[in-house]
Amino acid sequence: MGSEGSLKVVTDIVKSHRGKQAVVVSAMSGVTDELIAATNAALANKPVILEKTIVNLAAKHTDTIKKTIRNVATQIDVIGYIDCVLKDLRNFLKAIGEIGELSTRSRDKILATGERLSSGMLAGILSDHGVPAEQIDFEKAIPDSFECANHDFYLAAEKIFARHVKKIIQKKKTPIITGYFGYVPGGMLAAVGRGYSDFCAALVAAGMRAKNLEIWTDVSGILTADPRKVSKARVVDLISCEAAAELAHFGAKVLHPQAVHPATRAKIPVWIKNTFDPKAHGTKIVSVIKKPKRIFTSITSKKGQTVVNIASYRMLLQHGFLAKIFKTFESYNIPIDVVSTSEVSVSVTIEDTNCLPEIVAELRPFAKITVSPKKAIVCLVGLGMKDKKGVAGEVFSVIAKVGISADMISQGASEINITFVVDESEADQALKILHKKFFENGKI
Image 1 (cartoon, rainbow, N blue to C red):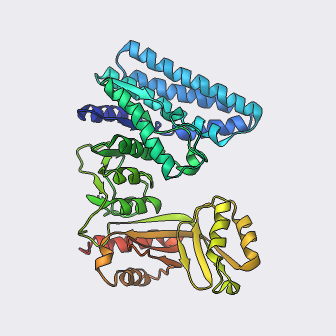
Image 2: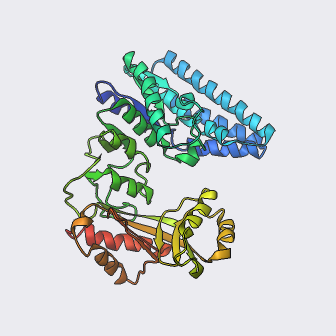
Image 3: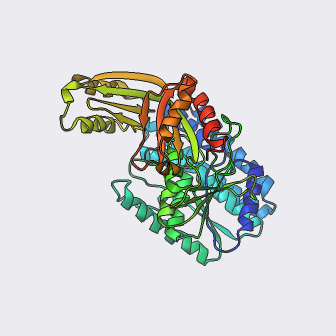
């Protein structure tokens, strides 16, 4: 949904899928960032910047509509819809500016505008190209009676989405669905984060018990490494849902970390496909791979990490040491990525350091706290580690030879990944040498 050219490709992809289908869309490229800018302008009482952003959004979508929809009557209808949505947005932002406050629900409502615009536009484009389509706006689909965004909440969302989609399919139309799905306890961005369109698509697929879920992006699947950092990275043909989720969590940007779980729980294969190379095989994500052919599937990294080490001899053999630590981070809504423990100390990595001074202040009365910024997580993911001894030793031997030391090391009992922390400046080098060792020299 990035531009006029990509919309034409999207139209061809939808037309090529015969039979019953539903399409979940994200906002056009850059639109969500513009909506954030408009929100900030409203809160800062800067009406000129606010109005300029609204005008830019109108021009961006109107120009695209004129270039992609041939029928003049359809053009007028879709442009009218765009104008109506942006008029509501303008009024809403002005009201926020007058109040000077913004709730989580209001912020999410503003960000949903991007998907409302793109879904209405794509429905018009498809109809103009002979594919009967109808927009579904999920903004108000889920009732606000839920108190927590837990497993039960998302199961309910699946059923609600399925009911809406089936109504459109029964009319022999293709549903065009907003990737934003309205009410989420705690807020969409806080509970799900950016990239929520993938997750929405997975919930729809699970609710519909679809045959396949295809996530179309700008790469030809999940790669063995980030191609911007490793020139010989290649596409992974087949990967387990656990491995895919691990990669997404630790830095791979191909899909949302939560996106695979609803679909794989419903035994629906997930495909990662390239919008700009539709004939490419892509990556297939499945629930279980019984006999993995490789030791590792992929390697990824995530920079911008801070290591917090909490040490306390007074807590030796004391109950509740770990609980106290994690409860403190939870109270400030700070997610923890990697954990490494010893008898008297715990080391964790965090990305959000906004409340770190307050956290340190709470933990300092019973522990010595050391904070180390500018760190990076490196994560090797695969299923073959279970059947091969000495893999971890080989990994750390490789990085040690070039003078890279690991500050933290973590490997779960499931042996899906080997994760370690290095200085941020050494992360790219670690990626390259490990990829060369395990992915380019016949080791996988």
